[in-house]
Length: 197
Length: 197
Picture 1 (cartoon, rainbow over the protein chains, first blue to last red):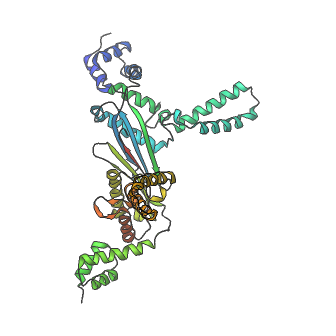
Picture 2 (cartoon, chains in turn brown, yellow):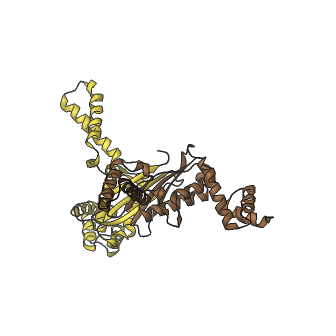
Picture 3 (tube, rainbow over the protein chains, first blue to last red):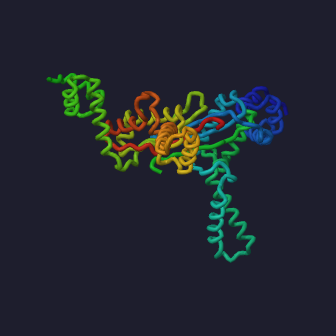
């Protein structure tokens, strides 16, 4: 089918992807704008992955104070160049992540940061809970692994559901920004203070 | 001498102290407004001390981002009531302390928080430096103590010179706020992120 220039422009505005990518996405999805966005997103996430490992020493320190000053968040988020650090898209990403931290109270950025003793203790609790089920060890192991994954999804920022679009994780949000801004982006560290905590 | 009501009002506006205190201060200082402020400040600091130890579980989380997003500060500062937490004076104090932290990069709030091993290591260095002076032990001890005090003044927020009025310490700034707001105030914790640090 033939794709109108207007539709291509609409998709470009929506995704900031290149013209040829947008044309291809719309051709592949028979001119369905929503599906084309998904198509690009998947493609974007793939191409984003190739940016991992690149040095990201620029970026921003961002903060967010909950209206009444009862909760506050400080965040360091890195990208590769000062140019990208100053884009509205990068600033919006930083802002959205501070909001996420304020609302969802993560303890770590990713599961690799959770101390081994914390993981062991969680496992112990889960095995204790599963013990009475009288199931084979392999089934118990699966149950415990499932619970552990759920635990990581709660306490690790990048694995959390993104509060504004719960169908994606915070990590996906970052990957989308990587695809859009074409630089590696790293959530480096954060602090979250709750009054009287 | 007789003190005019206008002068008393001026002093009250300037210090928010009570009418009788202002009258007394002006009488004691022969109507010299500046000296009366000092008089009240000294008095205030004394009366402020009596507020120590009172429970301070209210307050604010405040943040400050250096214009270009390269340095950020998050602060918890406590007072006794939500009423005081909402006053412009308390908010200004919080703001000024975040500015102080951004500019002067303290590592701790007070010297009691500096880990014993850090203090020992500093002392060792200072004794090493003083060793060649060929002085009696007592003199060496004094030199080391002097250097240690200087070190605390650099790394402990409350002992630092207040950047906007270097003739007072940050602790004095807090004491003045205690005297003015008539509640105990505690600088509870802070985080300071510098980009790429």
